[in-house]
Structures are given as structure tokens and as C-alpha cells.
Length: 485
Image 1 (cartoon, rainbow, N blue to C red):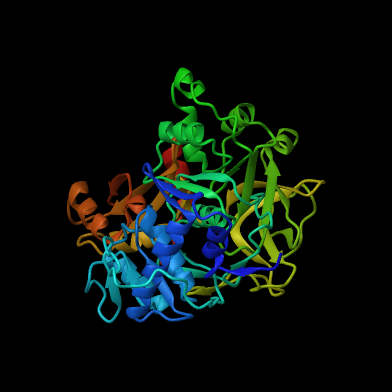
Image 2 (tube, rainbow, N blue to C red):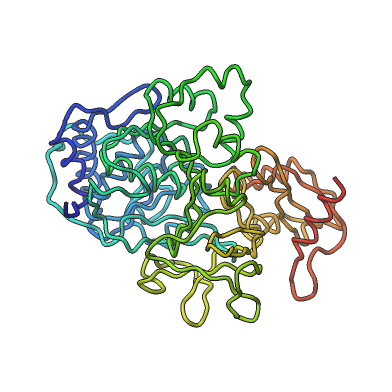
């Protein structure tokens, strides 16, 4: 069928079956008609506060009914949802609001951002507002996600896909009217993309306040979940449960399990293939920018161990060396991607520029190689970005905050290997003339950074970490600490 505006998609599903469950959170469930009505009323409240078609609206809410309702309310006004962590300090959120020039922030105390309307997390629309459908209007961009930048300042990645969808089309292997569990934070692109796609396809979506391995398995068993989103950290915690407890849950309802956002250890991948099935477990590699994606099933992985899959239809991939030459199969270089429709067809940045070749190919900063069959194998990251628990952390952003603290001459932030999180953030702080206390420095960091970016460990040194050009060799610092155990 033809595409339907996201301002109308809930009404479409409510008309088909108004009482079907659509959203479950912490034991409470909204039907399709209830979610439609509640988001209509909230949209009118946003409209009264100045939101109009084409505006960006920052959603700074934790996982919950309110996050979903806010997102649909924004779409119903032809505006663009711009999710951020609800734990962001005011300073970091202010930088994003300034970049996006938002018309409203959902989830910030009144007056938190001068000149911008802020509605608190517990905001409830007035009972006099109608819950009837609003006029149809379709935003040019269906989402604007936030990412740290290599300069230490945030950037927005604005999708060029309009806010419209064919509700019956299979997308990411997700067909219509299933039951899906997304136990990740919705302000991250992976959970947002998969969770919202599920709702747009008429699924019963189950979300959680935070990830808990036993709770996730209990929800799969209880709701007969068919589609599941995971990152390797979640997989590790599920597998880490006592075997008897893990085996006590029925996961046979699962038809499709996506894992993404971080590399998955081979032993863990194999364990989940055995547990869920090779045709159920799927891996996706790509960025929020959507310049290209690789995908492979667990069954494919068994014959291409370590691969992250083949490039999908509509995109191209090649491996390039430091001199700009395209490399043959088997040779390691930087991974570059390009949509068939050309550079910039899938997204645009606010606050950054893409790293691209002269002819428009773009890199996500990964190193790897293609085999003779076109399967991609990643070997390392060109950039210093730290992947921790499926979240991207840019060292420059954390270092900029550390360097603000009195007595700090310079700092270097690296990721140290961790079985659970993939990497843990470790800060090396050069403070030669003053004895600093880690606890007081952590107070400073927590005032300026969202929790997952705050270093888990801090090391103080008395020698310069940067050369005269201001460069820091994070890779060498990391390797040194790993070798020391």
C-alpha cells in the first residue's frame, strides 16, 4: 500500500483494532485507541506552547509511556522529534538546544533554558483539550538524533526520510502486527529506530525503564515476544545468569532478534546462535547517518566467523588505504560507505561535517576488510571513540570537561576492555602542581556529563600527555595500560 503520514499512523492502526494492546511499560498497557487519544491531546498542548510544522522538539524524557506519547505528539504537528538523554546536565542540553533551535523541550523544568518553552517530565495536558484527530501534516524529517562529536561538542544527525511509512511493508525484517521488546534507552538511535518502527508497523511494543537480564527473559516468556532488540552488553548479562534460571524461560516465540551498536565477542555470538537459532539472530552494522548497512544472520556467521555481514541493497561499500586507493579483498583499510542515491541523500549534520572522499564516500571511522564474497570484517576503529555498553563516547568531549577543573594541565580519556560493557571509560589526568582528589573531580564531571560518559576510573600522572602540537596518543596510552594488566 502507499505510505501514510506518521501524523495519521496511530489512527490507521486504531481503526483496524482499537482495543489491541500497543504499548506496555512496567506492567501497564495502552491500547491503540488510548495511545492515539493521549498523543492527540498532548499534541494540542504542544501546539498551544508554540510548536508548529518543521520545528525541532527536544524530548528529554526517560523510557516510559510519556516518551512515546511525546514522540507521536511531535509527529502529529509535522515537527521533528529530537531525543536526548534525560540525565543530560543543563549545560550539555543547552548546547543541543542551541544547535537545533528547538521550539520546546519536553522533560526539562520550567525556565531551565531561557527563551525556550520547557515542560517538566510530569506535565499533563489540560482535560479541556480535545483528543480528536488533528489535521494531517508530514514533517520533512522523521527524526534528529544526537551524537557526540570528535571536536568534543555534540552534533545532530537529521534523517532525510520524511515522516511517512508504508505500515504493511517489511522493514529491518520487521513485518506488521507482532510483539516486540526493546529494553534499551530510547534516546539512542538503535532502540529508537527499532522501537518506533515496531509501533509504526502496528506492533505491541514492550519497553523497560532499564535493562535487567532476568526481567527481559520474563517479558519474552510472558508476552510471547516475537521481535527483540539487543546490544552485546545485554547479551552478556543474559548469558551471565545462572544456567538453571536462564533455561527456565521460554524463548521459543522469538522470530527475529537484532543485535547492533557494538562488536559481539565470538563466544557470545555462538552461544546465542545455539540458544535462539541461527536464522533468528541477526546482526546489523551501520551508523545513525544511514549511509549504508551490512547485515548477516547467525547461520551466515557460522560460515564467515567474525564478519558483520554484506552491504545491503541500495548502498555500496569499499575499503580505502591512507593514500585513497581502493583495496582488494583481504587487505585492511578504512571502511567507506555510499548510498546509491549519493552522498547526503540519507541525512545531514547540524554541528559537524562528514569525513568523506572527494567523490562523496563517507567513513564511520572503522578499519576492516572484505572477503572474496563481499562479507565485511572489522579489525579496529580509526577514531578514538569508545564503545561502552552500546553507547558511543567521544574522548574529546570528556577531556574538555576534565580540563576545566582547576589544577589540571591536560588529560587523556581511553577505553579499557571490560567483559560486561565492552569498554570502560578511564581518565588519565595530568595535574603536576596540585594534588587532586578523584572524588571531588567526579563531582565536577557529574555536573557536566551524562552518567555513562563519566570515567569509571581515574589515574593521576605528573607528565604531559600531549605534545607541542596538542596531540595525544590515546592508542599508545591504552596499549600500555592493557599490557600492565
